[in-house]
Length: 261
Image (cartoon, rainbow, N blue to C red; front, side):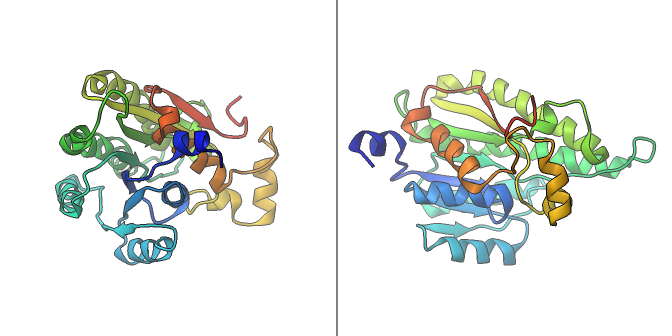
């Protein structure tokens, strides 16, 4: 890589927190940040999964596990204390933890609404709130701290795939919340952007990608004819966190192979 490109995209010396970083899109982003030079702290509800993922990713760089169930707001303060205890501050927050629920409209339960909205919208907001002192401490106008909220093209389309009504509503909400955060936090030298992925391999999308037949049916609707790869999502995350993305805020970057067209 040329000196120019290395300077533009390096994350050397940065510390990132990725929620839901043990699996799926969160892990893809964590690995990309590590390979770009960042120290990565991952959080996940399962201690076993979180610690195993951090151990595996430690071959790529400094990766540490802080298992917390962020569906409960009271655990947010504990995660913030974890990050503070590491002692390196915080430059990047990736709000990736999420849940979904599918049921026909006339059977959709209140529990399925509350669980998804709480984890996908409420928890990211309060995590941002509690981490503001850490994020702003090392930020500057030339090198702002970064917030990336992981949305979904489901928040931009009218078709509730799998009758996932609370999921599509939550992802639309987090995309719009991102714009509000971007406006309010610009004066604190913090940018806020969102990524709206399409179809990527993960536990949440296993019913669409888990076997060859399902994958064939799913990719038939994608203009580029394939599902996303770790480089597809990781590269966008690195862009938003690097010097190359320092002037971007309030943006929603769709990474869907054209599925949202």
